[in-house]
Length: 103
Image (cartoon, rainbow, N blue to C red; front, side):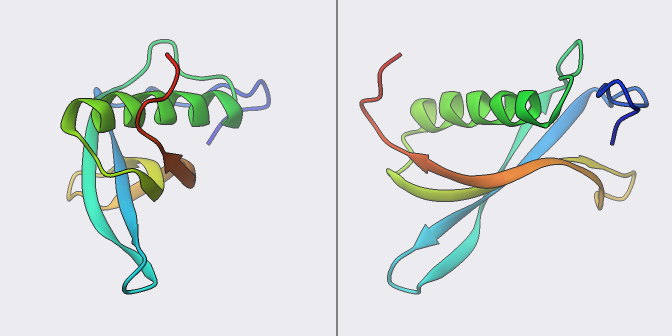
């Protein structure tokens, strides 16, 4: 993902995808929910923590705007190749979305 300075080693594409899965308690597992397409950050985050904060900020904005259900989600921010396959995973984690959060 990066060189020894923590910077992304090659230029980023214009957009990045954040694939999101949602926890369903009735089924007891994650299921595909949506893909959020975002403009690439400029400059690119310096390390894994910055990538994580970047992804969560985008998810929060979309979840608030689109009225997602509160709950547990899993996300993976990634670079896709020319045929829409994952070429590189930039960050991934579980995320708890709550409505009425403090700004």
